[in-house]
Image 1 (cartoon, protein in one colour):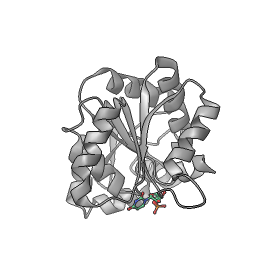
Image 2: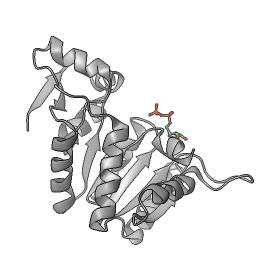
Image 3: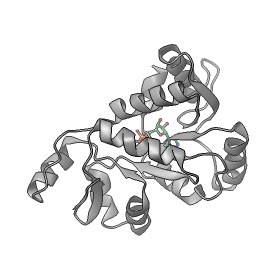
Image 4: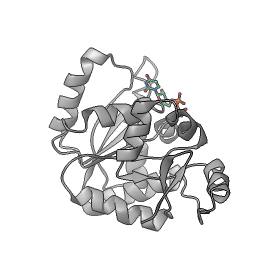
Length: 202
Ligand code: UDP
């Protein structure tokens, strides 16, 4: 697997199939790996945000997201051959989790209100329509305070989830996974999915 650098920020040269091979490897080894899907804006932000730069450097998988990075890769002389879209990749992950009987924890987006359940709960229901055997270990909204994080990590651990989907907006979601990676007892990998739970919730 080849890792190139754009503005000195690393990016993996992978198509969807190669990304899934790396992903499966991460799911098979102990410890929580972070998967990041930087777009041009994140790459630019990483040049002036040390924690963001470091977490990308240490990520188990760095999938370039967005056409901007495809152009940038041509300028640095190592063109990315294919775009992996976040939507396709998340679908491939959910299909893999369903097939292998592994479970996902959905964290983030708006809490429940008088009219509807939380976005994460609705997203989970819709994921199970598309992937009927998918195990949703638990859900939690994305509006918590710093002092509530230890309790949240405990809930995620107690759910027994193998994989974490965090929809807190970038780079908050990546920082959450990175900062707590050593506290997760069962989570093998986590990914920031931005507004995807809203899309799944419909
Ligand atoms: N979000 C959250 N907690 C926060 C801020 C945002 O759960 O403190 C959720 C928000 O409800 C939305 C998702 O994060 O579902 C993505 O937010 P946004 O569109 O701002 O981020 P981006 O897609 O630009 O990463």
